[in-house]
Every structure is written in structure tokens, then in C-alpha cells.
Image (tube, rainbow over the protein chains, first blue to last red):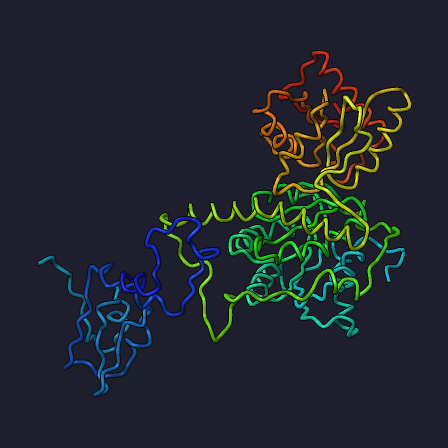
Length: 104
Length: 393
């Protein structure tokens, strides 16, 4: 987010005069700059031994936070995963478990 | 060349939208507005108007389609009335908040219950806070001219707001009147095609409109909208002046009638001003110093202009064709009262609710209103300062 603000020289606390008309966002794909990973209280962990690489977690993830790795397996993008647990619920072989995030 | 023609008022607005060469019309038929969009669909079907006519399943969808069309830079028109406007309510705010020029004709109709298709101003007045520019017309000529002007006002870079042209259901919409109609060449000179803003929605340069607004930004967004409405007053003045210079018909926020030496004035908006004028004439014949102030612009409210106009008045009788149950009176009345609270010199302000659900306001009833206003000046008290002029007790 900070990077985005700096890139487009946006005031993080814009006055009403600085705000783009109707507070429209003038660039596409800005949600990339807004990391939602810190909303998470449970983290999905994929058990690679159980995983059959069916890809259903990738299909069901509402945030596009499951990545396809080069070898055809799947991993969680923790920068954006909000920890909703849908992937764990939908996994047909129960290869995903939700582990509570603990402050270290 | 401008030509004098006889036309149904609803069709005058359709003709104006056609001459404005609108790109998109999205509307749902509802009495007493139906004739407007019926005519426009005919224009499109007959190839007289090259526009996308979108048949939608509701007014909520009609306004949603208009919003999308305006966001890509199209010139957009729609029309509705009463319950239809109420169903649009949510989207009215989106159109104004996203600063999208759209011109909408509102054939003012009462809100249910009871199921009433006749004219009063309770539909638009219930949506008065939606951020739209709101203009009230009295007759076919005003409706025709205001519609053409509305596109120019709405699409001005300093404004970028939707405009609602209000006119009474049936009393104005269904009446055939003579108007001076402009031709395509004349309209083209006054109203060139819409300039598409650089930030308009386009696949090549995506933008996001109406995203989540945290508490952090909402105040700034609303303040920006307030500024746009305030600025629009200057633009409306400019556009009306330009129109007057080109075609000879000049308009102002208010139209005073026999006000020069008046001590009492009726203030109201819409078609019943014609009847009020006759009442003024009759009272003048009796030697009473009475006048009329017709209100054309309700949002933004022309505050300074009204103060200037009323400086010699002793009483102002405000006639509202809408009211706010449990509130402090009709919408125009409360607005005017709030405006004058800070003024050292001010007239006595008396409110009247009349013409609800299409009940005609007769000449003698306007005269009763003036009589009651005079009594208030003599010290008579009216509970809460306003009364129902026509209610059977």
C-alpha cells in the first residue's frame, strides 16, 4: 500500500480537493498493493503427501491466494490469504489444515 | 429554424432528448411518465434516433444501466415517476456520488398508499437529498428547454452531476401545448456531443468506481459532492444565459410575477403556478398587493437569490405539494424557513400543504391561502406554522 501511495504520489490522507473525482481509483489492479494477509487468524497448511494436486483449493479460493507452482503442486500466498478456511473445507482428501496463527 | 408546434408535454421532453442525440435510454414505463419513453422507443425503432434503447425489468435496473452508460462517456437519458423513482432511490445516490451526468425526467406522482397515479411532488421531494440537480418546470416549453439545457449543465466538467427535470404528472405531462421547438442544427450549435472525460471507463485504461470507502475518506467524498452542487449554480446561470442569447428565451432560478410592489407572495414550484397567477390577478383587481414567486431550481437551493427577491415582502405563503409526516412542514417551506433564520429582515413565512395525490388547487383555494397568510401577519397563530389547505375537517 505504501509503495502504491508513493508510486502515484498520493497523499495517504487526501483533502477533499486532492481526492480524485468521486474518489475514483485511476489505476487497475491496485488491490495487489493492499496485503490482506494480516487479517488472518488461521493459516492453511497443505500436506504435500496427501495432496493429489486436483486444484479444487485454487478454484474455490475467493481471494486468488492459492498459487500453482511450476511442478504442478499448489501453495498458499500468505501475503493475501485471509484465512477463511474454504480451501480446507473443500479439499476432497483433507490435505489442508487450518493452524492458528500465534504471535511470536 | 425554430418552429411553433403543438405537442403533448411528455412528447416535448422526448423530442428534446432526441434532438440532444442521446446515446442510451434505459427506462421502465410507469404512469404518468410512460408517454415519454414510448415516444423515444418509437424514435429508435423508426431509425430517427441512433441510440441504444435498453428495456429493463425495473427502475432500479434502469438507473443502474444509465450509471454504467454514463461512466463510459455516453449521453444518457431516462424518465420515471412516483413508485418508480422510489425504487430507483438507492441508485440515485450512486449516480450523483460517482459524478455521472444523466438527465432524468420525473413526471411527479404521489407515493402509495393509496395507489395513486396522480400528480404531486412527494416522489422527488422524498429523494431531495440524493445529490442530483433538481429543476421544476411549469409547462411544455420549460420542459423542452430545460431538458436540452440539462445535458449541457450535467456534462460540464465543473459539474459532472445528474439532473432531474420535474413536472407534474397529468396536469403537465398529458397536456398538449404550443411550444417553440428548435431544429437539429440549432440544437447542435448549443449542445455539441458529450466530451468523454479522460477517466471514463475503458478496457484500455481500467479505473475503479465506488470502491469500499472507509470512514477515513467518506467525509472528503461528500464534501467534494457539496462543492460540485454549489459550483453548478454558476454553470446553470451560464448555460441558461447562453440559451437565452441564442434562442431568446431567458430563464432564472425564480420567476417573479407582479412582485414589484407586493407585500404578500405565494412561493411554489410546478404546474399550479399557472392557477396561482390567476389568483394573484384576481386579488390585484381587489387592490391587494399580491405576487407570485415560481421556484425553478430546488437543488442547489438558490439562497441569496430568494433573499434578494423577498426583501420587500411582509408575508411569504409557501405552497408545498409534498410533506414530511411528523416533520416541520413541506420541503420547500422548511428550506425557506431555515434560510431566513439568520436574516435580520425577513418576511413572515407560512406553510401550506396542497395538491396531494393530484387534488387540484383551485383559484379560490390560493386566495384562501393568501387570506390565512395575511391573518398570520395580524398575529394569528397556526400550529407549527403550516397547515393542510384542502383537508376536510
